[in-house]
Length: 269
Image (cartoon, rainbow, N blue to C red; front, top):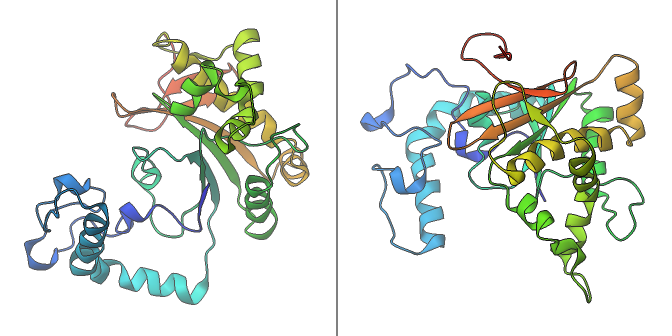
């Protein structure tokens, strides 16, 4: 699990005025994939060299733009209003799909955007619970979003039964046991979209998993207390890579509706 205390580093300039002049005529956006950057040397297949080239690109083109805001955050500390729990998939850039900047999101990422249930046999994990407790009790966030995505490898692995393979379980197999509740929910009450059919069984598990993990969040006493007190909102989200489309769970209907470019969610006809 990777725990970020502000937001994904690929979008450090997310809160900066897009009309501000770029140093040295720089035109690449901060979240441009490395292979698409024309402003920095491409060090071939060396992953370390590519990482350092990206850091140099940040120092050369972005640091100057974000330094005042980061300096303010350094002085005042973080005050995020939202906890965003997402899968660790490299294609999912949380700050890009939420148009957020430094200090906006307290972000937790893991394989399959899972929330372990306390005392789950053979699968318990306190790292997510600790992050959730810190966000709720110390940072006092006002919402928690669980975000799944299309083509999730963890959901594929669950359907393939990786978590049930015989012999001594690997760390990945033990972790995926936290998705057993999602498999059971898929068989019982699979989640649906409001305005389109699911593409396949993997996608259906992806969105069903979001619903199940929201339920498992409520097993955290700090979350349950604040939700019941009306001080905390739980949000389910799904992102379809191929369509660059976000969907949000409608708590009233139990279905995922596409988020429109204007305010609101596209509802079913």
